[in-house]
Image 1 (cartoon, helix red, strand yellow):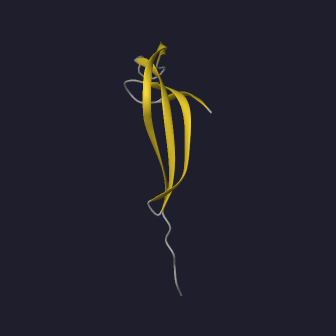
Image 2 (image 1 turned 90 degrees about the vertical axis):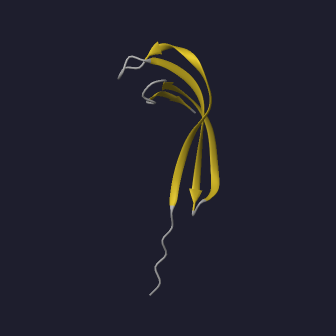
Length: 68
C-alpha cells in the first residue's frame, strides 16, 4: 500500500505599510495600514497568491481589520 504525504501551507508577508490613526486594542501601540500578500504553497511550490490590505499593530503584529 502506498501513502502520499502532501504539504500545504500559507505564508503571509507584509509588502509595505504606512502609519494609521488609532491604537491596538491589545497592547495600545500604534496601528499601520499594510499591503499584505498571502501565498499558498503545495509541496513547496507556490500555486496561489492573493493581495489584500489590513490594519496591523506595529508592536505585536495583530491584524486588527482586514480588507479584501
